[in-house]
Length: 318
Image 1: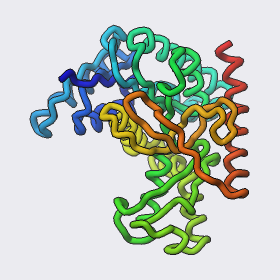
Image 2: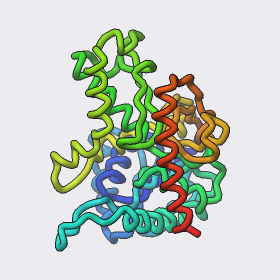
Image 3: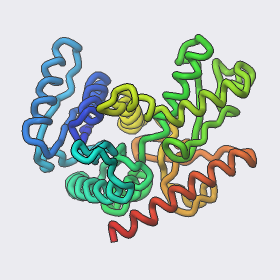
Image 4: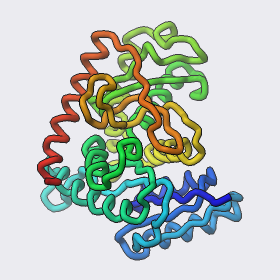
C-alpha cells in the first residue's frame, strides 16, 4: 500500500514541529520546505536520524525546491511573518502591512504547491488565519472542502487544558467546543463542554468558567509574554497534525476548523470556525449546532470581523 505524502511549508518552529509530530505518528512520508537554504535540509536530516531511536519509518526530505512536493496528499502551510517589534524602531508593523506581506507569501506558496499537488487537501496555519484560508482557496482554485484552516483545534486544546487544571482531572475526559475566529473573536460554548459526560456548568461556577474562557481567548498572548522573543509552536503544530491525521487516515473526526460556510449558520460564503467532519476528502460536513441568542450574537460578531478582514484581503489579491 502506498504511503501518504505530507508536505509542510515553512521550517520554522511550527513547521518543523509539525514534521516531528507527523513522523512520530507515522502518518506518511514528509517533505519539509523553506526558502532558507540548509534550514529544511538540516532539520529534516536531524529528525530522520531520530527515527532509529523512536522507531518510526517515515521518510523525511528537507528541500528548497517545490518540485519535491509533487503529489502530496496533505499540505500544511505555516509560512508568513509574525507580528513582532522591529528591532531598530521598536514598533510593531501595522495590521495592513502584516496582512499585505502574508497575502503575498501565502499566495506564492499556495500557487506553487497547488500546481504540483492538484488533489491535495490544504491545511492553513498562517495568520491572520481567516484571511489566509481565503487566499489559499482563491489562489489554488481548489473546491472549498479541500481548503481548511487550523485555529479551533488549538483553541479547544487550550480551553480543555485550563478546564482540566481547574478541576484537577485528566484532559482525556474533557470534550469541548468553540466556534468563530481566533483570539478575541472565538466563541467558547460551555453548554457543549462536558467532563466524562457531565456538563461543565454543573462542575464549575459561572465566574470560573468565564475566567477560563477569557484565558483561552488570550492563550497565545500569554505564551508570547512568557517567551519574550517567540510564540507558541508545540500546541499549534500538534493541532495541525491532528487535522492531518483525521484526513490521511479518514478518521472523520469532528473538529473545530475554519471551514467554508454558505448556508450553514447563515454565514453567506466565508471560512469561519465551526465544528466539521474531517476525512479523506477534507471537510466532509459542517456540523450545525443550536445556539442561544447570546451565543448567536457572539458568533455573528465574529463572522462580521471575518467579513471585514476578507474585504481587505480581496483588494490585495485583486
